[in-house]
Length: 151
Image 1 (cartoon, rainbow, N blue to C red):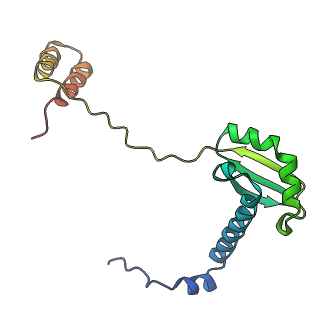
Image 2 (image 1 turned 90 degrees about the vertical axis):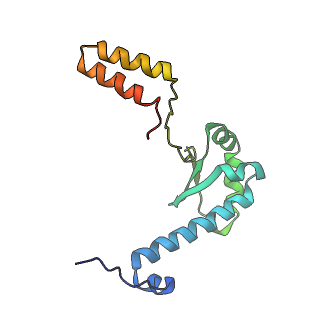
Image 3 (image 1 turned 180 degrees about the horizontal axis):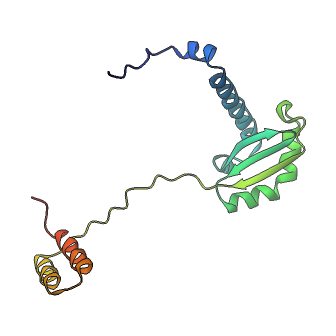
């Protein structure tokens, strides 16, 4: 018995059939539209640091990349509120909240490569043979293996 995936469907067909997917897509489009409207009112330097998170019941939640930009935007909050209220999308806007959330950074593998000289490897092996504690001996032997390339 093997797994056979379902045949691929066109994106338009998926949007018609999958109601949760359609709702999610519509929400993403709405946030994108709100983001563009917000950016039209922000200073050019602030645009890349401020993103719309949600817009509910007159409250606009903005995600800001760091505390510096959050502080700058808080100082401009009243002006920004007035400017956004002139736009049709934000006509019922009553307050703006800022939340600091640094951008997700891809973490590289934290592999520390250890390069030991031959004499260091020999010293570790000799020390490991003279140690009575089995855990310490095993640790020294593992450390000594880092000096020799796997053959």
